[in-house]
Length: 164
Image (cartoon, rainbow, N blue to C red; front, top):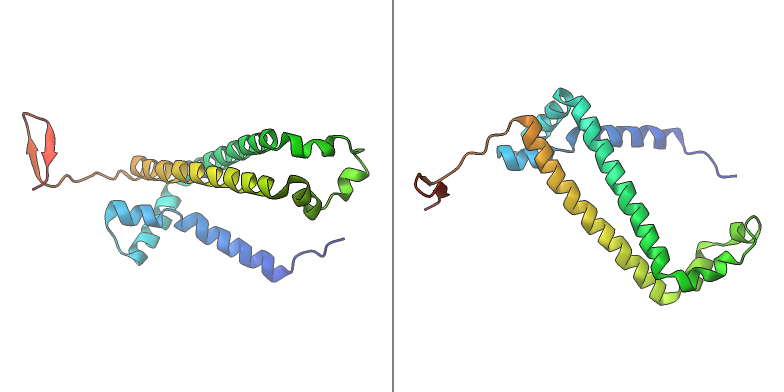
């Protein structure tokens, strides 16, 4: 039976999670409000505290999207490696399946399967990163009331801003 984690490990992970929770928007603040590092961290904490309910929904939405992408990735991974994973279906569920170790699974899927696994994980990471950063910027702009200052000259006939 595995040993429970040490108390210092639990407390340090709680501190790290709370710091990450409150400072998650520091980079977005720095870009939209053109502030320095410490001011961005302060504004991020202020933003989270002022919009706590919305920020919780933001985090839950990201978790759901990540879970859906993960499920789709597992489905795609299984479909791509169907032939190599077929021996697992012939094992008797309680005994043999519990005895399968990670090394056995790697030997079963081979080098090609490891490459497929890496590619599927890379696609999930790219898709989730694109979603996360676009959603984060949109969420911050909508909830922080950031107004974007246009620079240059406005052409009333064309309805566009020109930067000279």
